[in-house]
Length: 255
Image (cartoon, rainbow, N blue to C red; front, side, top):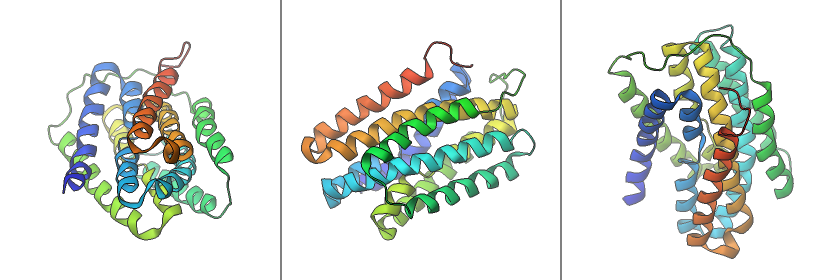
């Protein structure tokens, strides 16, 4: 019951926090917070408790490849938003995620290679984002229904994905834990509310957050069996926050 409550409430709380952070500090920071492993982290912990550290570590290895698929979602959405509205952009981005995920699940991949991809692809995608001129005013008042709708969609999506993860097996469980639930909510709403530039800036933050998520997942995949659940997840959380902050606030980053 406790974990069910966490699954139900954690993602809406994250969307609420990321939205407020975006309004206060801009879409890059809001996206960076949303890219952290607030979904895959608790789900991975639950898997470790229920199925053991070996199963959780193997699922984490697959999640590193899932980050690559999520990066493809971000890149596809960013470039689609230059020409299309949020609907076509979202469809193209989700299609890119599933196409890359299907491809990666059929390729044998060692942990070092998965780690290199999980850390390197988000950094590379940051350099491939389009530069959309203009300014973004996040202070504009939004309709009062918008944030509750985002939170509801996020919570229901996580419940669905975590139920599927228990059915489809180890490899797809890891992939589904990185499904762009929050990304597919924040990016369309950013585009609708503030335009394509805001969506791209949100994606920039998401990609920075994915680097933090990759640090988290790598620590779980490589060290959970030796460290144990408590030490492993504490160290992984510290790695996630540190990795994401280093990228988001690095000198010379785009704003």
